[in-house]
Amino acid sequence: MSVWLGFAIYAIGLLGYNGTLRRLGVSPYLAWITAMLVQILILYGFAMTGWLTLGIQVVTYLGVGLAGLWLVMSFFRKAQLRFEGIHLFDFWMIGLGIVTGHTLWQSPIVHYDNFSHWAVMVKFMVFTGRLPGASDHLISFTSYPPATALFITQFVHWVGFSDGAMLVAQFILIWGAAYALFAGLRDRSRALTSFALCFTLAISFVFNVAIRLNNLLVDYVLPIVTIAALVGIFVYRKRPILLCAHVAIFVSVLLLVKNSATFFVIMIGAYFLYTLITNHHWHWRRLITVPIQFAASIGAGVLPFVWWQWHVKQTFTVSKHQISTQAYAKQLSGESQQALLKIGHKFLNQIFSLNSLSTKGILLINVVLIVTWAFVRLRQHQRNNLLATAILLDVIFIAYYASLFGMYILSMPYAEAILLDGFERYMASTVILNLFIGAIALVRVLDRQQFEQNFAKRDTQAFKSATTKNIYQIATLVTGFFAITMMYSEITGTKFTNEMNHNTLPLQMSRVSKQWTHLNHRKVLIVDPEVVDVNDYYAGYVGRYWYFTDKAVGQEDFMMTPKVFKRTVEQYQYVAIPESHRTFTVLTKKVFHQHVVTGLFKVTKHGLIRMH
Image 1 (spheres, helix red, strand yellow):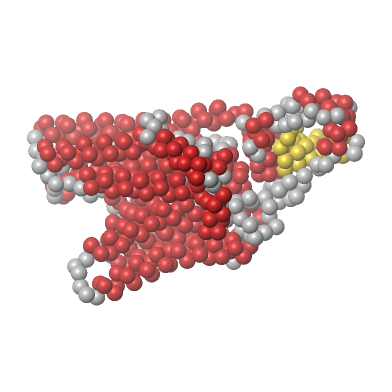
Image 2 (cartoon, one colour; image 1 turned 180 degrees about the vertical axis):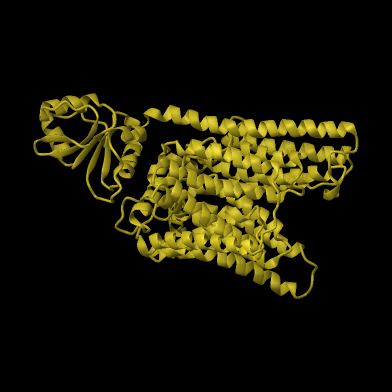
């Protein structure tokens, strides 16, 4: 199947779900991400019952069938969708989305964690058609839930397996969730507020710079899906059935993205409860209905995760990063008080350091919200909620700091915790989420500053004076300019990263051999002259992913006698040399009388045979 035909099938299927959800009352700005999450949940059910490949076919062709049905019904003028109009942010999302997708399609995957879990999980499901079991030692982090991997697997099934295809799949998920932001606008025809949200989206990638879009890690997926969930709660606040279904779907998928999504789910639950309590006239019956609505929605959302936890416990005797109170208690009892104080001191230093990107983000959010609040309150004499929003976001930051510190002392070994391993990456998620929350609150307040509050009467004449009109137009041009240039900065940054990575281990591997796509247990030696790659297991993980075997090992040190060298090499079935290793070349010459520099070789009794 060609890439374009596969993409067309997938896209038509997605359109089918989108159209169905819109006819059920889902906001057109939330329909894309909701359609994706619904497909993930259906795929999850198929995967957990051992029918993943069939599930991909059923889910996609069901969407294609729905698309066909709505097309026929629209032709006969039945069940037609209301046209929402095309706005400036649509052009921004489509244009820059296509350019970003094109860049990602040409991008390689090089980040360590892709090979330790995220990419290898997708590859496993694509080529085996199932979730890993106890005998599949290729997957190390067996307790990690599979939501994003399922979504990417479905896309890759249709367009073909490649680094670029996986990256584009995850970007489609991110971009679908990002589109939900615009449901939070009061008036979508206003260019200034639309571009302000586009600008916020572009800025968010600055705080994602630790991992960028050219990898499959979920640190950006978590906040962008969470903000879509929060916006949906606001949009559906007067529609209880849709509201409860929305919460259940988003909570389910977030918990199936990563265990650490619990913090974001708590935020969704809190806002959901607040909305249930405050958005209706009070009656004694609501003392019964509110708890039932809340418990049913959150309970339904948690059930798939409970199923996953049961699956992990039943399938794997020991699982890395599994949620376990016994493991946490053991870890805590093993840490001395002095060790905990050292980690705490390092943690506080990082928080209050102005060199910290996350700290700069927190300061930026506070300054913008508080300054705008002061201007509107003191100069315009209008009440607004921006100060309360800033305080609320600071409370969220403090709570997240506490949960992050808990993770360092409960889940990480001291050697990693004292280095605050991944601090900026983890903090980026909550900075990005709060940036979006602050931006939506800000643009709604800015909209209320418009002279004309009747949306139908807003036009080029609906300004208080010529001066305010000029200020509005200049602000719109400036915001639009930076929204475009900041997004282009992310795109060019990704291209630059790709160029800088041209000599990294994964790309060297691609130059010496093709990927293996049949799951196997062949013993493969990865000869790597970089000590760091071997010591931190990067070479081994890349080898395991590339050759689809759980027995790939990286080695740098070959300072040994010819006899020991021969015995060492003959322990393996294959030897991969992605970069020339002088010692290995010299010893191969001595032992096997062959001149070997780079390539993939089969180990035989008589020497190394080059594989093509």
